Length: 279
Ligand SMILES: NC(=O)c1ccc[n+]([C@@H]2O[C@H](COP(=O)([O-])OP(=O)(O)OC[C@H]3O[C@@H](n4cnc5c(N)ncnc54)[C@H](O)[C@@H]3O)[C@@H](O)[C@H]2O)c1
Image: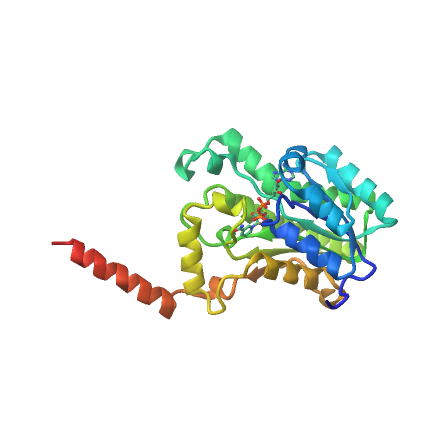
């Protein structure tokens, strides 16, 4: 431990169970000396394990639907009350698509579901930032991070309407990052994480095959949830005060690859087996 977050107050949205990226972030933030609150939906609190995480990290759990401005106001107000001051860091680790869940493909989207996808997975980030801004709830040099995915910028088969949500999320980080930086010296960034085996991750089409592919393509291999949490610690710390409005790839190098030796050798094997199927 480096005491990177000693004396800092935070809010962590999106820990569901011990697979969640937000769960690992909470454990690391606790180890790094932060105090914080945890938030998730009433349903997630009921069916997930967040209460256990709250006990372990001495964090109050505050129920909120991140699409509700009223709920978010309550989270920020209550957090400042229990933590004894303004907030230094916020993690938005929230994503959900009903089109993905209900197997509606991208060329046959249900538009009510699309509205929900965008509201939950992207606009909630704007709502969070706007609520915090109006309440003046984040301290100077504070840091806000949301989690994104490379499909925001490159087309990946099967990521569906979540790609559009992530593109919007990354844009919100830039647009609000400008205002928050200019007015309050607050950083707003997204971290674009490798595919990771979590509840939300398992919604991604053929996640196991995709993870094998990205593992072979990335010179450093896939980044796991714990490594993502480590990166969040750096982004919440005072070591990255001038980093803002960025989408930061945390993917072992995947996003800058076109083809790798390992992926090519696997691809060639499938060509051989295709050729043998030909006769
Ligand atoms: N797992 C991956 O492969 C991967 C890769 C890149 C980015 N991400 C992103 O990381 C973030 C965290 O996902 P995860 O993989 O840890 O999965 P997860 O399922 O553990 O976390 C998703 C969380 O979103 C919460 N949520 C859903 N609707 C909500 C609402 N209306 N209000 C508040 N919270 C709500 C869920 O309760 C859950 O805790 C998401 O933004 C996801 O898109 C995940």
